[in-house]
Image (cartoon, rainbow, N blue to C red; front, top):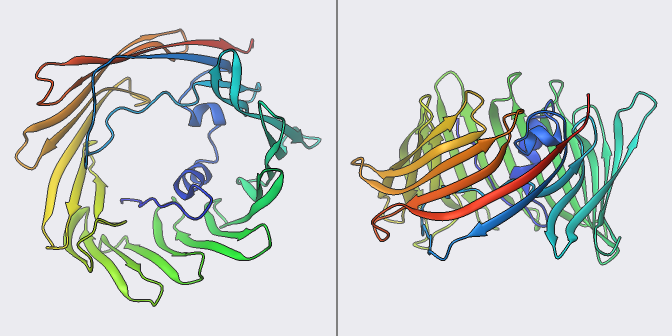
Length: 335
């Protein structure tokens, strides 16, 4: 089932939800690494070619956590980008209980030492997170989980305690999302989605501040069957992506005229763990190639890449062109 992604005020909803649903993975694993990674330092060298994909999927993703540090159990303790020998990002101080479990995290600006966030951790993930701007509390988020460890309630208030957003989610034991409702800053329902595992029917709707439907669609077994939106302007929800069992992603780009352009993105990977793509191609409904990205790697003994070349193609380029070369130095904890 396709899981929509949205940004609530002041926070990245999709990122936090995805992390919460993968609570058994370490930070290093979530960042795409294998083995006891201690630190990583990345240099990205870009070419001068222009690579744009207006209205299309992002086929080339930047290296995750380009300059990061981890403790021996894979928990991130620093992240950001090195600029002239200085880390532009955050340092993370961990507080552990007597059994070694992380129960609090304090993230500070690596350059200024100013507090950016404070998290209280529970068995399934963070239960509270305070976010700071200019040394002052800007948002407070609280999180609740169901009996299987899936996030079920996410509430956000601003620094003065005023309501700023909420998401209530229901999932099954395996983590399949069954129902989700999201409210915006003004307290009105922003969007809803639901999925029935028996019928394979998925429904999605967005609403304005008066509760009127702005956009709605229905899909059955990963295929869009109806679509409607009130405005000719592009809006959240009118680009829909479904994953197929073969690894393809079917993409619907829909408009006010209820016409949806259908395209597919296919990924091939290096290795069965599917951590590193070897190619990503975007084709239209007739199978014509629109854009492509192709990757070459050199790997270390832990199967983490240390060098990556990214080649791209589109009709304007004519031939494959080198987009960037990435190199990273990875240090490991001794075991």
